[in-house]
Length: 227
Length: 381
View 1 (cartoon, one colour):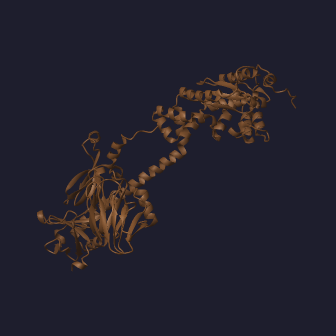
View 2 (cartoon, each protein chain N blue to C red):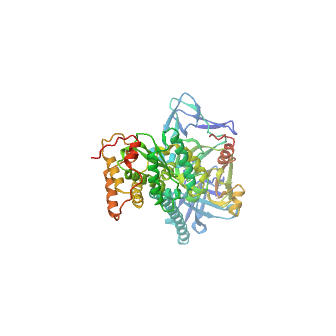
View 3 (cartoon, rainbow over the protein chains, first blue to last red):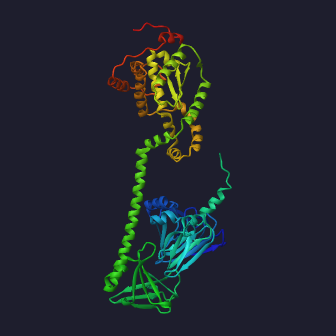
């Protein structure tokens, strides 16, 4: 399996080359095009209950699709819904990533995806909701973001502060606390930042350069209100 | 050698990538052997003795065992996640490490316990709120209704009242109107602290019905008056309807229909938003059905009102009984007021508990009223 990102930037697409018999899983609806040798199957990752819990809990789509080169080698084109960069990670079997619910685009069939419940404070205040995806295993993983993806590398005990709605994915070896952006509550909210996450290394944090919630609020002002 | 390499831990250090170097950790009697992937490190393996290690818990959920050694550029941090590996470490670790290890483990347990308690509390509170809403809904509705000013109620009722009367044949004067006005006056005089000004209109229609709108607007159909054998029977129905108004049953239904959000809106004081909603349901006011408990309340308070007004309460009971008999043709009042003999029986029991009182007759003659309505005087059986 080989993958490359086409048109890097705001409107990228991933091209995956599959050898005969190889298959990948992708977010439902992510396929843009494929060779005629590739079959699309719908699969409920983790069984029906697993899929149901993922749908109900993380808001991720109920079915992942499996794209299988069942009749000889072929290629698949994949794209996310929102404009924004795609990043490809090679999971080594030891590293695990926490991914916010809209971040998963596609991955090799050898990676594992499970829903994970966050602690109450992180779920309430972290901006990713109570449930996130925990992705481990060995193989290629493609994540998508809203805006550009920025990688922050943290050494052991190094700290970094991220606005909570800009998170895409972070290593399981990092930990974070939610805190207010400024020293006082009023200043925190009037500064427009509200709550932030203080990450502590070691590990990697991927953030997106745009905040989907703020963008939605911004665009709402142009939508005429129907009576 | 590289072909069989299977990493079980991540090692962090100055020369390693930020995501950590996958490595193979083996534990023996006096320390660890860490083997790196050949591409990552110049020395393929490293040996660390237990004596040089510091132990803590780390990672997102404090479920990693973190081992640290070395200083400066040589500092290393090792993250162990695999339960087998952690167990092996625990068994092999000497005494001076087991204490910090147990402390770290204790901390993990505390964090997990705290999470469980927090989630349990949240789930419990959600359940409590849900149950509270389920069983306390009526209470909330009452609270909300009590906050609605009478003027609103009147505006709402008036709009529906005018709308209804505009396509009805209203009886403006005559003995029937006089009779109804007299009954209403006698009943209203007995209401303490009455906030409502009752308006009763007689509508020419053969429908055997009467209804009350929020704010004190009452409509009596001539069909009901023809059906009644005495003024006391009609007064009984009026007593019932007036009490729907007094108990604000119509508003309660509206608030219930509008839903719990409306209730919250009223309680927190957003009364403006509600008026729009109520306009929308204003047209529905006429088809508003009261529930069983409200009917029962109106029955009992109606009976007491009639009793206080010194109108013979037996009229109310006989009329109810009459309506509960079947094969009586088209009785509208039945459909909106599900009648049962149990209801009349309940009233009888209630009446029996009240001290006897001699009723005062009305000033009108019921036969004249009925005559004016076109009922041919039939000899009573």
